[in-house]
Length: 368
Ligand code: SAH
Image 1 (cartoon, helix red, strand yellow):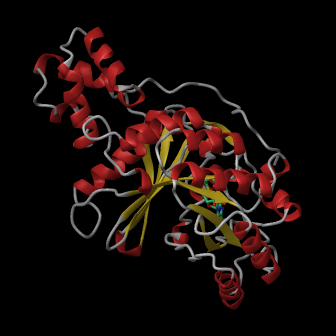
Image 2 (image 1 turned 180 degrees about the vertical axis):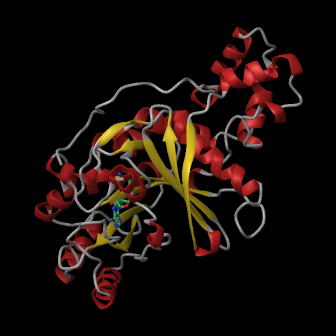
């Protein structure tokens, strides 16, 4: 797969209420001949009650409710498949977008928190060979509202008590679904703003509970640091040496391991947020003890207490020649990093039985 920085298809989804800033929401309500305070009512329905259904907006005048809702809330995402695991507490949804592009999101409920993994692009142009989405290529960027709609839908389902364990709400969000979030920076940054804005202007989430995961687009990492919203940054490293990393994460040929790590360290310095290093453990590929040592050394060379490592056993994609590292090898890798004083936690592989992450469902559907 070649690297692709720009999308193949450029059709734009319809404008949606969630694409607008609070001031623009007021302006478009007024443009419809409505009073400005209607914008706040619409925002309350959307960001606080998670609804865009005119029937439920009984505080709006019956005569214009329908027109306002259909103009402001065009349907952007349509669920076409739903897969469950872990007794219904892990739910993966495949969404079709207005132009039939596909993305997926995965909801994971734990005893003390509920996490949603969202997509920021249809497909991905980063071409990482172990990742199912990487094999699809990039279809297009999602709009802000297409990303936020995944969040609203999850919150709605949680509030309605559809997930076992009683009604709850999302408290964790990871940009680890399809796409490279920092290759779609404008929409992702607007999404983050709406996620952290207090209700009813936004979803009122805490920035620290939002993780933006990147292959290491260095200039965009630096811009994210300057945003002033301290989200958690995850860097998908997967190898501490340029030779191997250029194979596993092709963008490494543009920004090297050292450049990506420097940008990660810079992120910590500006935001005070500890950075996560993602490392998919691939049998006999990147799981050697010496690579754990090299990673530990490179991280420590940039200071202490600024980073932690999340190894994750590879979730093999269909047709892949690669498999997950063996348990003993994984344990040794973790022990070596800890030996260097690096906080290290194996990432949970929830939902791997429903092709939990990594674009596998959309890829499978493309094959059908
Ligand atoms: N493009 C972003 C975010 C999406 S992927 C990024 O690369 O960070 C989210 C995480 O899942 C990344 O760390 C990615 O490397 C990892 N990943 C992708 N395919 C995987 C697989 N088959 N097994 C384990 N992790 C995988």
